[in-house]
Length: 234
Image (cartoon, rainbow, N blue to C red):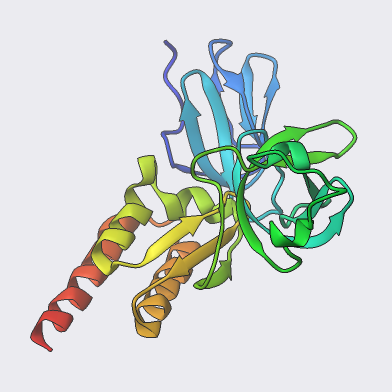
């Protein structure tokens, strides 16, 4: 296979050539011109098989099917709930997207999900007419109670999660803080102490602002270990 001109997680800029070959396909934020594939935006290169994508360092959330997101209930309608997921347009959670049978004429839907509730759901459909449907059928889907909500740039989510969850798992394991990251840039967290939550928020902010820095995972690990050592001395 033709060798790439850039490697996984390399920093790229708009118009930068990524490969000279028809063996690869352009994915998100990439385009083909002749035999070549170029970057559309400034970001980090992501290689998935033969598909090249660029994880933009700035941008709004553009929903895709099967994304796991965190959204806020904005309104209750006769057949479901209107959800704010931070996209250019609102999403909808229909009754058919909730476990168990619900009859809107007999059930008070606010007893299931009320205005202001924060939900962890899955994008089930994104239509060409900008209609987004959410489902709560996935075993991970749930309503959050307690904890706090943090919003980040959606483009930084892959770096916050890390490869195969390495970054966020390390943070959770070393702090004991429960953290759920939505692909729309909304994060829920709950720690045993307020100080723990604030420390995790500082780490997430650091990752956001240094997402392009090589060796960031090791740097975050050192900060975590240093804090752990201080806690052991107390």
